[in-house]
Length: 225
Image 1 (cartoon, rainbow, N blue to C red):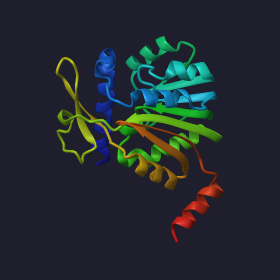
Image 2 (cartoon, rainbow, N blue to C red; image 1 turned 45 degrees about the vertical axis):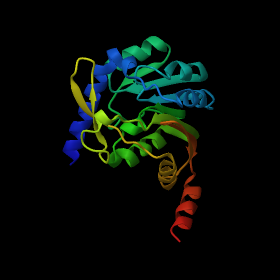
Image 3 (cartoon, rainbow, N blue to C red; image 1 turned 180 degrees about the vertical axis):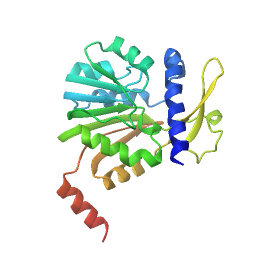
Image 4 (cartoon, rainbow, N blue to C red; image 1 turned 90 degrees about the vertical axis):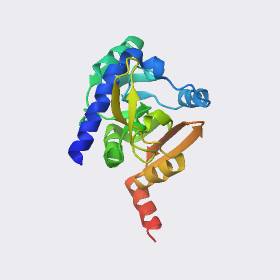
């Protein structure tokens, strides 16, 4: 099971390497995108900021404008090259986020259109990575969508595995989990995060902080009664 998921995640990286040159051709044109973008633009990220899965740099210039320092991480060198053109002052790191460890702590962590590509069995570990990357009191901000086309659902609606197609017709399997915002809030709360998730169309975004250990312990104790 672990080997199968590792293989799928490797194929996901291969897809994003291959799609880099035509990434804009596959953008979602759905109601709610402008609201999501405005919400992210209004967030309070500042200081030393870490961007996870920066992709082609969709959000990187905006983060760079506000940050004292910006470190952007992605597994695809092709995506990193695109992002570096948009935000040349940032520090870029090529790494697999399921194996990478931050070398410092940050005031804020951001990831755009990434959490839906984190499989269920890696979800908790990913959020532990985010916690390790944040300074005490640091903020996390994310944006994503729950959009999957009928053509992608070759494994059924209940599967987190979908199939994406490039312009040349070649196909790749990747992870795409259509997370439900209210359930996402509850799950993050159980993991020790105080994050509010908002929605518009297929898009959702969240912002918040980690509970202190004492607050999280009290919340868990209360919930277990």
